[in-house]
Length: 201
Image 1 (cartoon, rainbow, N blue to C red):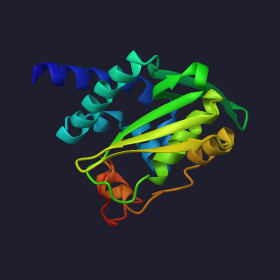
Image 2: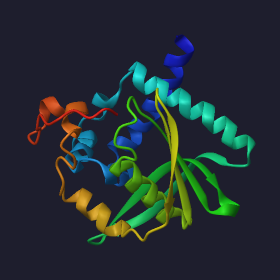
Image 3: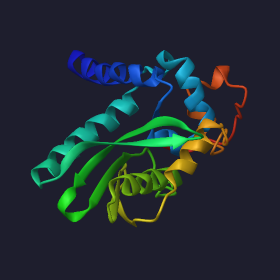
Image 4: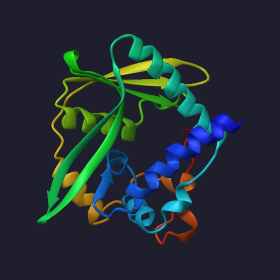
């Protein structure tokens, strides 16, 4: 238990510094409620958690990442790009689960409690942003659920990164999906909270 706890919390604490930096934007910010980004900048410590379902996801990522590394993939591959919005510079950062440079192939791994309604729209958008940032041609979205393991192939489509970052900064979509608020750690302090339907993640 101690090993798992130390590993999970170390990863989360390392992100706190970036979470406080007003110039840093994550790829995951571009596919979620935009107000969540603004609240995280003010109250980053509220994001710290140790939940079994999240731990399970991290362990699945680590295990499959090891298998992909044995096949020549670069795992937890970090990407970044400077983005200028209205004359101000920001850094868009992300980390793809696996990248095979010579094939222009990006792999994203997702764990889910349910195999219903796959693939998820926000997961597809996240993968498309990564394809744009890396100039990669193809992506694979892999879902690991209790009832099935399934993969979806995604082709590169142009994404206007500057527009996506600007929409985030002006707080254009809060929430982006009706189910987001139910899972948000900021829901008790958010003026845009909507107790919408629940979705199995």
